[in-house]
Each structure stands twice: as C-alpha cells, then as structure tokens.
Length: 142
Image (cartoon, rainbow, N blue to C red; front, side, top):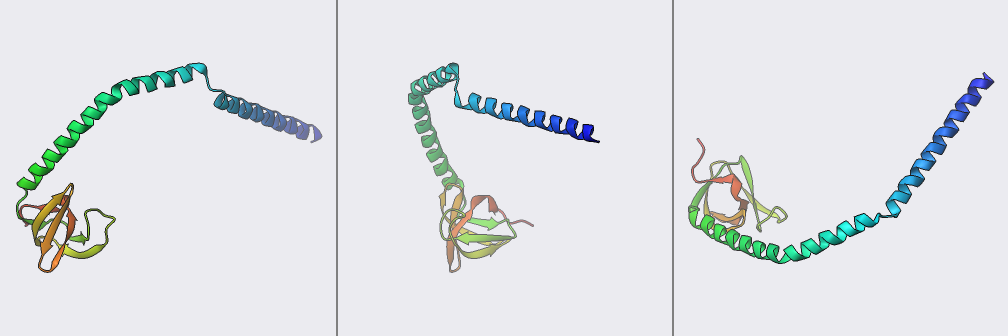
C-alpha cells in the first residue's frame, strides 16, 4: 500500500510541475509580444489611416442615403395605420428606453403624425406617443 501511495504522490507532483511550467510559458508568451505582431499592427494602422478618408466619404454618402430613405418612408406612410400586435406600448419618446404613456390594441386604427427612424409618432383620441413601425400595417388584420 505504501508503494501505491508513493507512486500516486509522484504522479501528482509531476502533474503540478507540468501545470506550473505551462502557466509560466503562457504568461511569458502573453507578456513578450512578438516583433512581427507589432509590425503587423503598425501596418494595419497605416492602412486604416490611408483608407480612413475614403471611409469617411462613404459614411457621409450612407448618411445622405439614409436621410433620403427616411424621407421616402415618411412620404410613403399613410396617415392612418392599424396595430398588428396584440397589445402595443405607446411611449413618450422614440425608443424603448422612454416611459410608457399608454397602450393600443390589435387592429386599432391610429393616426400617423411623423416618423423618426423605426419609431412612428401616433395619435389616437387623447393619447399621443411613439410606437415601433414594425407593429403597424396599412390594413387591419382579419
């Protein structure tokens, strides 16, 4: 029995030594960055700086397109739409982080006042607020 304990102890010590060596090696690899990795990062930074100008131009063009698309969406929306969700929260502002002022029900008719990205300002009776456009349709469900 003593011999089995010694063999088990030796195996356990060897495993801990192996784990210790592994940890030290991984730390040294992590701390000592390779020169080629630094060179690669520098090259990537230089490339990104040269393409930055063209990316900025592309972003400005995308913003103009988005603005034009929002105008088209707003023009295309009818003045009256219907709720397609079972219950839909009407919020104080455009976004789910705004407080809820009321609710509208399925197939309820709402008046569209304005569009702000994916949020639509609606009014119904004495309630005015914002709902997400994906829960509105031009026709009522049957």
